[in-house]
Image (cartoon, rainbow, N blue to C red; front, top):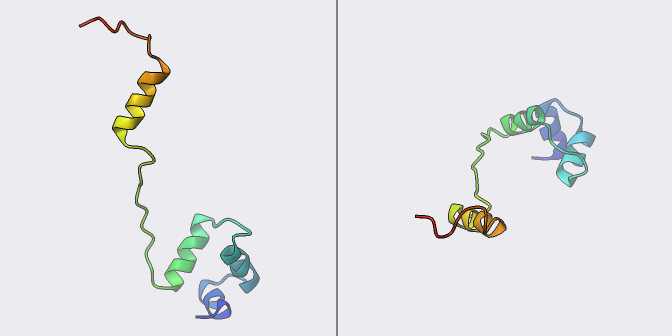
Length: 73
């Protein structure tokens, strides 16, 4: 599908669609929904952990090594 066809189906100017594709402007959620609807697609957001929970806890403990008594039961 060409930019012109997609822009017509979305109801947004082709120049704006071109700037979106080029990464020169950020998508607003409403615009993204219109583009995806025009392409018969659904938006699915999947969380992705930046760190494993155990690594995050270990880093936290290293930042404050004496915040608690290490010999306490």
